[in-house]
Image (cartoon, rainbow, N blue to C red; front, side, top):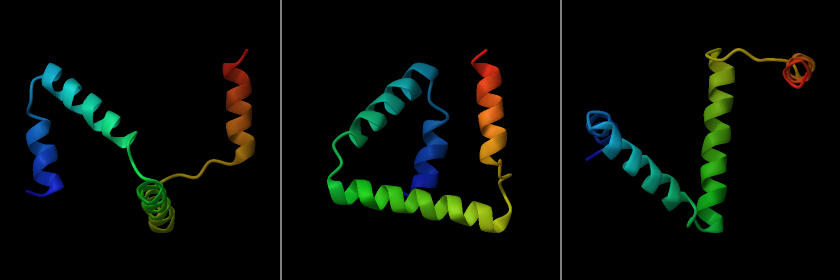
Length: 74
């Protein structure tokens, strides 16, 4: 079974079952080896780079992020 099928099936579970599944999945990430963590971060960086290159995300300047953060901290 592939991850798309698993995700589709999981989304049809009752909320309590989805919450338990999500919790268990998150806990399973705490036990990753150093190599698995490195690979996961590389995958995430590549995914984000692809989103930037494809224009599917809007980039926000550091100045704009800082300004918004300062407003939130008031």
